[in-house]
Image (cartoon, rainbow, N blue to C red; front, side, top):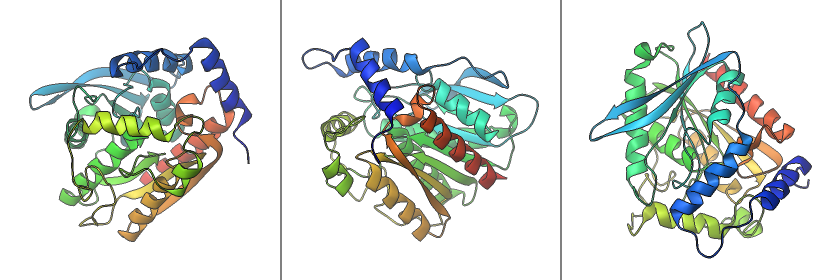
Length: 310
């Protein structure tokens, strides 16, 4: 199968509207450009939802967060971490994606603005994800969501943060996080899988771009490959991982590591499934307003997640 025509049309439109930044742009310039382009895919909040923006108080800092929820009923809570290579993105750039997840899955979605690299490099984003998840678990009654149905979700680097936070929390509180939706997640600090070799210079994400994102994230630190905060499959968990739904995009360099993580989750004793997003590239989940096939895949994933949560 070839890359989805609507997705290619989107990339062509954005390339013509926003030419590449000249020279060697800084992380801050790349972040600003990402926000500008991402705004093109934002849509008004669905009528069936309400949103609330507030701060999560953590030791020594506050994190901005936005809660999307269906109106008038108690639903499960999904703690969501946005993608962007730990460097770009926020609750605004991923607003429509989070809102669609809440609408399609009939869940409340708490989207978290963790600190970004390189200003706040490893392990700051990891710490933020873990502590934000712990805070959300403790605050479910105050947030007005189901007190016994909790999940995590994230795309790309956000999938990495969601998975490691859930595993960490699960080691301390087995079974509290009931499910995780990982959308083309970053899993390992490596660049030599077959999908990396096949799609090193592909559409949507390249190997060189991922090397750059990892460089910003680590920012001179050299964690061991056995560090589960970096390599999600480095160490078997103490308890079975939450039920795991992984989305792997056909034309994504991260495809193979995403599938590998699903196998890892299954080997831990948990339930794991993979949705193969045929014809789609990395980042497709943000582009649902432009790409009907992306909308179908994400709608299916949201409903599966809701079914698992009960």
